[in-house]
Image: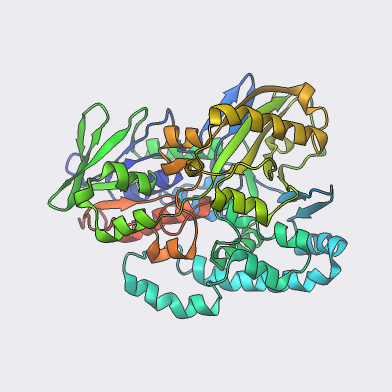
Length: 495
């Protein structure tokens, strides 16, 4: 590969790995650098005393995007990873103890809706139809299309208006469903990509159809099995991986990115630089201010960041066979709680939770007779100025007590090997600005052309992938961001 054009990828998250593979398929000599000890980015794997925990995404909704990466090299995803469809996809547990199992066949979903609100059955079908119309445009046509030219955005305005993308997800769901519990259940999807349902553009309503079209899956061995399979694929294709290494600066000469400076002062050069780091961090800390375009400065100045995440990882010395793989544990407040988290940035006494029990599907995550869990609690990002040294232990105690009193009886006496992450960990470990869980929030004014571009604005040979770029957060969005980069970069022979 001595005379081959070179590409250097900053970050081995899903966006970075996908971009590296796509560039390798185009003939580039590729090097991937990451500050973590292994691939995955935020999708790290933690092991404690025989318990395994996925720290990153646990829901696989568009497996064909992973298939594509292996197909680039005439391989099959199924030869390396076993994906298991889940039913239900999510179990909602409401404050009054009522539950709603979402997922499986349409008939199963309609039967669950009828139990709660028979009149909302037709509304759900209409919502699903609207979701499909959004999906056909926003995902099928636009998710892998570059939005680095404003004219591209202008061309989409008629379609976006027809799809009522100016409405929020909450407004879209409320148009079709009347029951308060069902409105909550069918509007939480933006939280999976860092958004408030009351502010997030209804474009993200496409997730309903995405889940229905492709199902919700779990990889045996966890998300870590996927990252390791991608790592092995990269190594088989001659991609160089370098861990425990942090890039401090991107070198820009005459308006073009020519390399990077590492924290230890080492200089690395390449024909192309692809960053999978948080784009807000890239522009704030890795690109000199004089090299930033006016558009980037405007976006940074007006940026509204996603919420923070407080995540407790723990094992139990007993099992909970009646607890689903994915549980959404809803608190007594909904809109008011989200207002506290996203806008007031107050750490409230109450909360809503996402509980992941991988041992419901894969017993290898825990020793025999035990269960493995993590519980994710949306919290304010670091702009809330919360002292996590003080509030972290208190919040953990409140969450464990709430679970002990509801769906995990006896948790206090059986919990073991527990530890947690706060927004400070996201800032320190992943260089996420303000400790945001998903970079900038998925507001309409931060979508498509208004989001950080996949082709760096004003800098040649620098490209960006990941949650803060188009099309947005979540595993499908991040993988699609690499497809956008692929569309922007010519083959090595053409460069």
